[in-house]
Length: 243
Image (tube, rainbow, N blue to C red; front, side):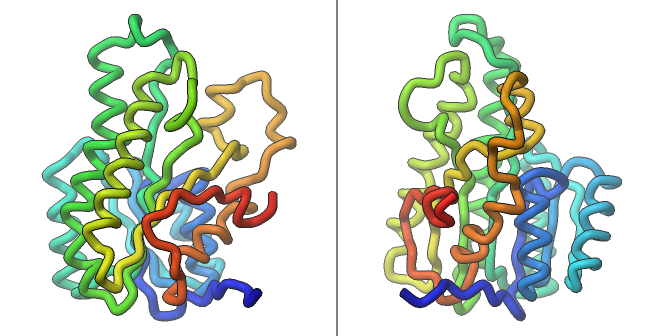
């Protein structure tokens, strides 16, 4: 089997939630593969640190301070991309957050609303705003980052699990609507990864037993490449990389 191409030269890629963990690793790996980056996150200082990493990898980035719950800011971001570049080659919907783990009956309305806003509603706003730009690219690629919490039973993870299950359903619908275009849309389950979010949920777990964000980043590059033929699939980063 021919190895997948990770050459992203000349491609413009937007990564949300790029200040740490998987988002940061994917952004830096994409820059190393030749992509021009747009990175978003809530904290300007953290974005500047990632920008330094991207430059050290030989790439360049435009940093955008963005809170995923600031819905009106999302179409403004898309308009700025359209004005400057007129297209978007890749989109990694990585931004996400985990509220307090608690029984469904104890979830507060505030925690429910925050989880849905960041993990699902904000993602829909991004899809809605970026879809024309991705379709304008010769080979648009989108990756929605999900979680194993979206399937099966995950006690105490109700809001997060519900939001990620909704994101997967949204992604399948979007992919179906894009079937006869050059746009390829896939859903990625990273699997257990050594991130701060994972550590907060599993404080007794030894992170050394898990793949790092850098370990799984190549799976994202495969789906961002212009020769990617996956479409409308739920993929496991661990299975793609044999981790």
